Length: 110
Length: 119
Image (cartoon, rainbow over all chains, first blue to last red; front, side, top):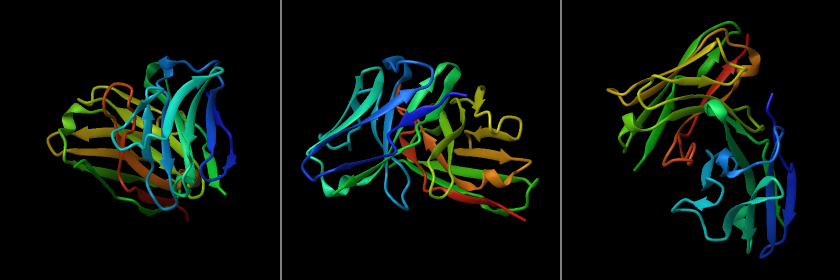
């Protein structure tokens, strides 16, 4: 069974920078996995932020950026705002059109 | 504006069946791959199934394979999830989601519908 692992929780100060990562149990994450990132706030549906590793949607704030880092997919928030406090999920696309979400990272802005 | 509206959730007994629907509007439904994703309250997102644009190809998570069936009616702009042999662990909010351009997966989401499996 394929497992996608994220940090369970991270804390960042307002205005700070934080990097969330996404690892695959099958080995290094590459662009072939089309990493996608999502933000979810309590009581809301998820909102897509980044697709295909580092591409932003038209509504994604500039302070969010995606990359590959040390064999993992990464989402970096620069100049964190209080409204960025949320759960963040990555998604990886495997061969055979199989899709797996990571377990999520709870980001606290404190 | 892309809109996805799920319906059909509710309380069902273990072993029972339920069919979820997702009504799509604001885009050419027949063009896009669609997904079902679920989330147990307080837990993470779990991908359930996907269907390609014309309905000829479907993929399932191992946890629902053989019990759930995804389908679509492009004439009615509607996505379905037929859920049979339901178990307590299938209790979750079920979301439908739409892909966008290549590599952009589950870009647009509905508000979800709650399925509770309990006696």
